[in-house]
Length: 346
Image 1 (cartoon, rainbow, N blue to C red):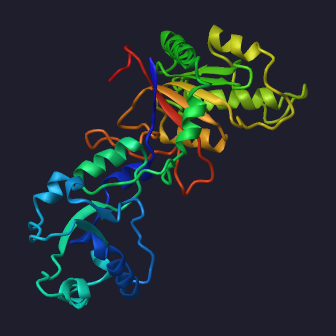
Image 2 (cartoon, one colour):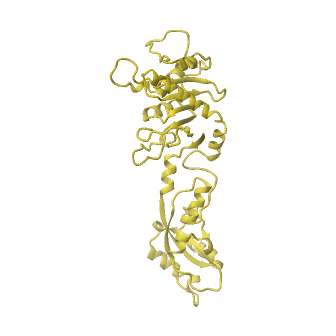
Image 3 (cartoon, rainbow, N blue to C red):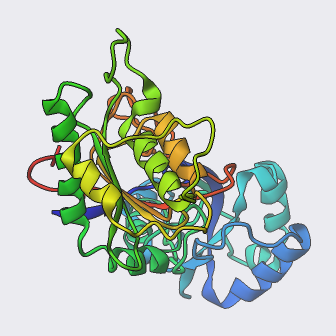
């Protein structure tokens, strides 16, 4: 199996947002004078720093080269200049301003040949995306970083420490299968691991059908039960606390994890920076429970398009598209991967 990092909601939005810009060919020797003149007309800094300001004709994408008029015959080398977004100035005003510049008023000079082309309005999040945009829109620069999600270096370093992910995912699947065999829940499982030691702090299967009720209790989803088990372990004082409503293990696998002395008593009840492994993508309630528990990493096996809350992409128009693991408006974020193997490749 392999780890597939999830894309954030902002990354997806950035990948499809475009804006229109003015471009025009100018003699290479006149580049500086035209740039200086444009700074007087448009004093604000160039807003599209991820796009190259000057491009040789041979580096223009085919889609752009096919749309713009051919360059008038000239003895000097020519560069294509990205002037500004179209929203910065109306075309007639720009045409009038450029037409008055010496480079376009010299004897035999052609007037400015302004064209309008679409370009990505946001920075690329990877070198591969920058290359794709360079071939499709306009030569694009990638500066290693990610304003729309976790920094690539953080993701890479964290992924290198998840060498046992397949083992823990299989344990989560086993926890889910155990409760399903007892007919007390769906075959969904959750395992919470201390990343410092690799020890399993809690393991839980889905228990929504436990009891005599005809309806499933959402508070007994696997994530909710596992988070509660960690809290009980970390708050263990030896005294009975009221109301006494503990989350009790339902299977032998859950009892084994509960009996391990690895709860770090006395450090609060949260799963702070712990790693969580799930057989299935969690629902909105469980995803928010993980967020409020301050987990550091979540890895899940199977996507759940209709109700899963971690994937930012909707699937066939049916996915929730919440991407709750990394949202700027929430007060916590965690890293998230899908574990893709032969069993759940789709």
